[in-house]
Image (cartoon, rainbow, N blue to C red; front, side, top):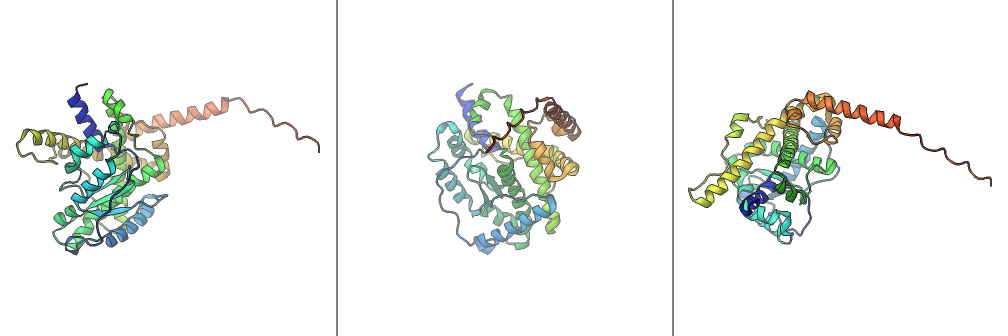
Length: 317
């Protein structure tokens, strides 16, 4: 595979799946947001409210707490660069952060769960820009995003469903594996979006609208200034952004159907029967047929298994 293509894939794939690693951290933002619009204290209170709403509305309870950090875009980029500074180049993270940090934490990213750090970033600049000084609007913007990202944290903690960074190299050698990643991330994004809607219903907050598929496929996330470098960056950034939006659309209906079928407990079966095919992602009933067949086969195998030998009699005292 050409070096340039490998470099672009190394930069792009961590944007679509962020594996779990550990490394030193740098300090987060102070407690007061710009113009007092949002603060770390208010964010902590909203997190508590969102967790309660996810429990009541979707049956989702995080086994462990996850930090939610209020950061400016500049602080987020600095933190990420500090985090990856000592990582092996083979992880793909150094290239990804150097190449895509501005796209990750630009003027549209309100919040993001980062599985490697096991934290949620909330980007203050975006809150201030979009809310225009309106505290109520800031809450309406933040609550559904925060609930969405908390679901990602839950899925990471409970199901361990984020691919390992070592798989990035294999994916770059086998582009066909990207489809499995796409369907898995579609499930994760759609599920988080639907669960966020359920939490918003409980909290009395307007949920984020379900994306339109045509708009998702043509969304502009990164503007180019006309230079060759920015054309490449914008093309990659928009391609990734559109793929993420398409993931929300494709996964939402599957997640809604799965929740109606068996509630939160059924998602353990869903995650236990990955990967999903595109046909299954687009039609939940197709997945149910495969799941039922595999469950029946497993039961038959248990019945056919030889009985364990009897326990030896206890020796006389």
